[in-house]
Image (tube, rainbow, N blue to C red; front, top):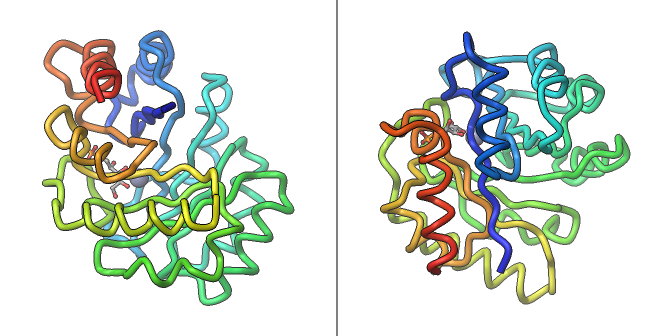
Length: 221
Ligand code: DX5
Ligand code: ZN
């Protein structure tokens, strides 16, 4: 089974951005996870298309862009032009989810969909065949370094079954509190892509060690 590690760049030291992104690549991380927060949908503000474009110039790793913003349809084109490889929208922010996912694909970008901890998997049923990725939030969105919510393991298993039932190759990604400790249960529940902020960028032995520890757990799974 191919598993993906996506370091969450919002946890990096932005004064050493180029070195830290290069260190992720050198440690064979797979994607760069980019958390876009607007201060409205979540009570934190991070970045816009300008910074995504900057990351794009720093690496050839695919940019896995997580949109925690209200009315994301307003910014799809700008993020597509800034170099996003995937755009993941929250079900809770898209009253016209089917159209929004189609718009992302029409821009030549891979569409992803994500659910807050309080949102049931059932909301995915109609659009599941359209997506390249489903992201299950394992913390309430808005901040890194929060405690992992173990009650999300049931929802991950449920979505794994939904994807297998329709024969979908979509990635099942998890985000929030992913670490050496929480990874075995997440893999057992059926997740295949893992966002890691603190576990990588704040590892006491550095980024390389942070990625390697997670990769070792995956290989042992
Ligand atoms: C939270 C973000 C996450 C977060 C992950 O809203 O979507 O990507 O930065 O950070 P850790 O791995 O430290 O929980
Ligand atoms: Zn995220």
